[in-house]
Length: 168
Image (cartoon, rainbow, N blue to C red; front, side, top):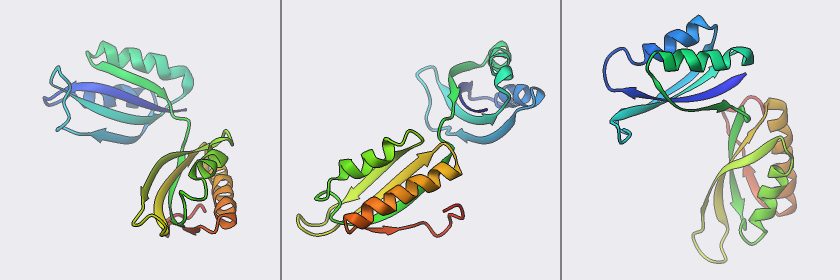
């Protein structure tokens, strides 16, 4: 099970180890750690986000061990969407019903548009959008991308796919 765990750490040496050691001892695998020392909480703690792969039966015990080490856990939850890719769309995106394009992916139940940025240079000129899709897995992401391609082809919108994505 992939879990996102957000903790608040005091800004002093050894605090990260209080989270990493229990994860290691419980057989967890740390996928990523996001640690931004410039964003502090009102209690002057640093929020740190861990993405961990751990057996679902061990999750509550892991949370308990981290709390026993004196670490404040802000949140933890299962990660639903594991595969993500971004695409550039060029065309009359707004005039061809953007909400329909997004809804076609979101209504699948296995993928969703998680981010969307649009640039519209002039009123009746083509616009550009950066769309990010996340899905439950690589196969589901491929299906969602197929839907995106199909919808955009019908609407005469150019889809520029990422060069570094080997799963598509």
